Image (tube, rainbow, N blue to C red; front, top):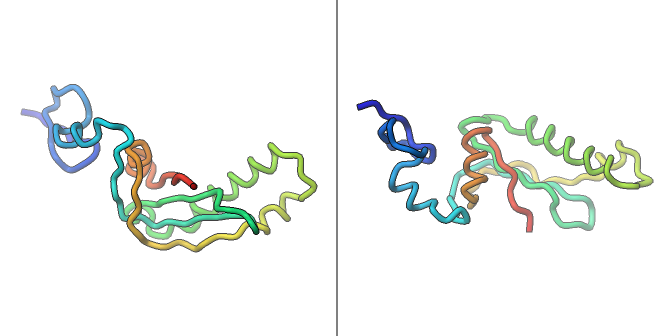
Length: 129
């Protein structure tokens, strides 16, 4: 019988089965708000005197040195925000004012949708509270 890998874990499921998850994962993720704990490289960014506006989790198996990708995604987010606001700041001043935490390896909880991005792209945006 031909099989395929479960989308969420390393279990094998029959190719003829409808869906992408094994029975264990289907039951576990039936509620889309269920959370999964993953080991990730995490970084956050903020403006002075503000809460973080940007947090990312990178898959350490996919990104050995995620700093370049973090900076590219952060820059893209800041530039988009600058273009959508009326501000007296120049783009360079806005980029220079961003503070960040550095990248640290830790366990984080992500939603099922975030986990799908984490597996497919190697990173996901985290919820900022």
